[in-house]
Image (cartoon, rainbow, N blue to C red; front, side):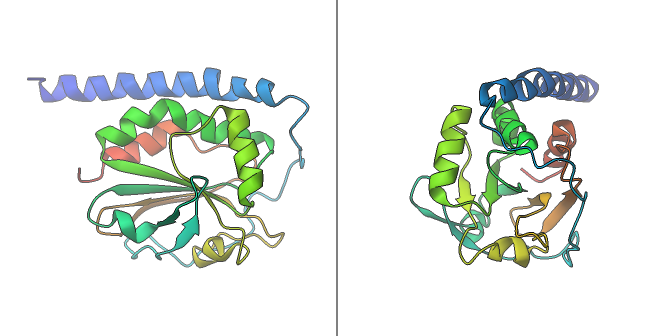
Length: 203
């Protein structure tokens, strides 16, 4: 039986390891995309304002996934904590590093009885080609293509140019929003912070 102080030390060490690997493994992956990535340059950091806040019930949605099935937020109610990751666009630099970085954190999602859902406004064929180039992802990737950006708009993260913000929503098993990060679109959310937020949820 681990003592409480040893347990928290183990968690701290694990978070540091994930952070180091996210820098070396995920960011290194961009070399794999060399010559295939569209660089939009520096963009306005945040271009929308969400009305959602911590403590609100998360809006339900149903979207098509790469697997061919329709996935709803509501199907996880009472079963899984959920982390929703909105990213702006396939085949762009930060997005092409961000999602592969989550592959190394799967054990932390499992440990915290959580599922990760990735959402973009891209269509299914584009997402299929893009994620295959990554070597695959363990989590469901959903297309918010039509009606265009409807779920991003529902969550208040649809930008004026038609792509979503780079945004994170952590939702507990009761469907309540516990963490929101409408992030600078030009940078990737820190993986260690997401791990810490997952640790706060009821298992």
